[in-house]
Length: 538
Image 1 (cartoon, rainbow, N blue to C red):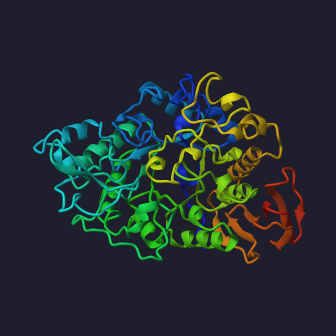
Image 2: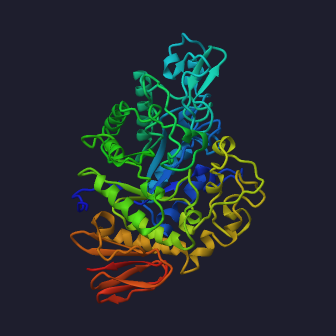
Image 3: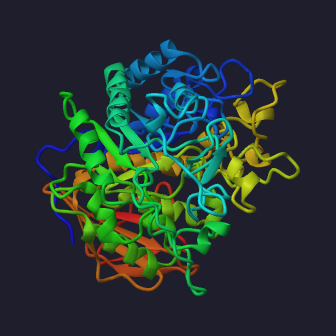
């Protein structure tokens, strides 16, 4: 099914990468908002206690915070909410000293309408930066075409002062950059150079397939009545087939240019593009014809699959089959845009999901708090802080962005006892928190720690080949990972009944539900209800 380990793997092929949403991770100055010094304070937890290899930081750049940092007003400065540039440098240096690589968000499709570039562009039709954004005259009935913003309403807003419409894929306060303008391309490449010089190890490229749209700007056709959204229900946005407002082939030239920039540095730099593409050949095209675009396009196929063995197995096998020769993939089951993993899956299945995520061939991405089983928070009557949820009913992301739960005390150790956090702390923090779970041998946190340790010690789990195992059933997914040094078999029981599967002789190296299980296997391994095991065949 897939090839064995490479001789010299870049750091990110073997890494487990942990996403931090800085606003909600740790508040060092008790203003209610997480910050960069707070992240520094928790590096020992990440590198030693938990045992991940890298962190991905969601945006911490200067921003009016209309979209909580994804509306950037200065790509090369830190918003005072998070600290300052000295704090950013200190964080990167401290992470490296702790053995952690640092990946930052590269917000590439748009800026804030408070960015200096847009202020100049919108000042006059004749300004030299006018063409840095997408401006158009309107149609007969208003906007230039029928394209819709992902966050609700038209993708175009009228600018009274200059009498034209500007395009925004997201909020009206997030105008789209004009990536067909070479000056924009080079200005944004300079942003990448800036952070590479500061010392980052990689970029997660936000909205990586949105920035190039149909140059003829044709209307999108209506979706057929039986059309099913490929990702999730997005309201009015799903009423059209998005043929012309996303992923124009010209975008590949931009990503090749970006790859040229990072390869001018004498170190392995990760580039991973955010794109919700479920046509696998199209998804794989973002590696580039000669593997000269992204190190990896983000892989959301597992997150979108139905949670049953046939669907999960089909998603895994299909992705690995479509990864180009010599390339590498990644896996994720949670992020700042989606419902919490523990709330999406049936009770007890988050341990199965964790085992799957950390034993598949590819780079795992973990979302902060998933390692302690944080659930989607019910915020009751609290006002929405998420602009998507304000504009499109049912799409608020606030519940998955609540503060990290460090302790059972009030405010969960995220901020001071007398401080009101920017989002309410989930009421679950009294039982779901780092402090309590560290003392519980059977907690999900200690399960993650055991599994991460096993992965770190296993060449098969880090870089080995993948093969689905014939012992798989409709309730049990079994696969084998193999390197030159060892063979590991992973068996995941999605069912509510105990069972056993034939895997050959070996020894249990890990169980999701029995922390001390280390029994020898003659031929068949027993599996309890909703238990995941890893068998070593050394």
